[in-house]
Image 1 (cartoon, rainbow, N blue to C red):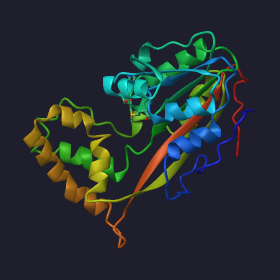
Image 2 (image 1 turned 90 degrees about the vertical axis):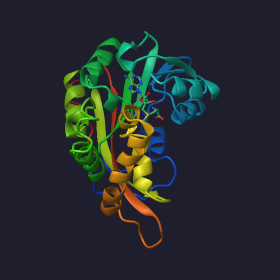
Image 3 (image 1 turned 60 degrees about the vertical axis):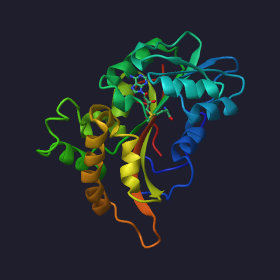
Image 4 (image 1 turned 135 degrees about the vertical axis):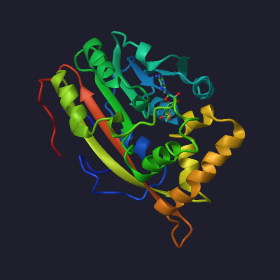
Amino acid sequence: MFDGRPTCGTRRSTSHSPITGDGPTANCWRASTPTPRGGSSISVAAPGTLTVGLAARWPNALIEATDTSPEMVAAARDRGVDARLQDVRDWHPTPDTDVVISNATLQWVPEHRELLRRWVRELHPGAHLAFAVPGNFEFPSHRIIRSVAGSPRWRDMLSQIDFRGGDTVDDPTGYATLLADAGCAVDAWETTYIQRLTGDNPVLEWVTGTALTPVRSALVDDDWEAFRADLAPELSAAYPRRSDGTTFFPFRRIFVVARTGADAGEIRRP
Ligand SMILES: C[S@@+](CC[C@H](N)C(=O)[O-])C[C@H]1O[C@@H](n2cnc3c(N)ncnc32)[C@H](O)[C@@H]1O
């Protein structure tokens, strides 16, 4: 069984939706990820502020991080993280890797299911693999983006972009099946957080930094602003501003913590 147990969110259900404070994902990880042995190494696929939190929680562990973004790697190094520019698909555990954590990255890797199987094969028995991916590819925000991008005005300009749908990631049962079949004990759950956003067009601003990054790269400045202008009213209609000026933005995340080398089929129930 795992050392820590998730204490926030609803497991395998979207029924509980807490109003968010700061960093719900990080809080969940702090609650659920296991403790590595002293002096062992943790590998974090893609650095961020979360990585710094891991170092604070596990001061005796060696922590390394990888990301394909030079900016992300530089930011992590500025925070004192041993970060390297590397595609997560090229990363391999070392014999002393105890914990692998990936936050909000594997959704960018179409072959991540095979990657997970490889990591399980390469990790020593008793190591932990923990990851979170967004699970909102069929939510209104993403449906609207796909709809606008596929409209006559934009479809030729954006034809090279793969606007991903619901099969981008699996649900908790899918990942539990994959990892249990690979011989792991698995703890998988999902939580829909109600992000409480402020400002004008807050959902547009949110997706600008996430789902729209390939669109930003594909369009010149004027087209980019025109695309955002087409999106804005549709997103505002789907996510109306409340009387207090804030906007609720449901965001589903899928969490998995797996331990290698366990008896297949040991899936913990809440
Ligand atoms: C939403 S951000 C998450 C960043 C960080 N993990 C965190 O929790 O703050 C997604 C990150 O995935 C990185 N990324 C995308 N594809 C990647 C790949 N194949 N290998 C490594 N990093 C990748 C991006 O550069 C980006 O920094």
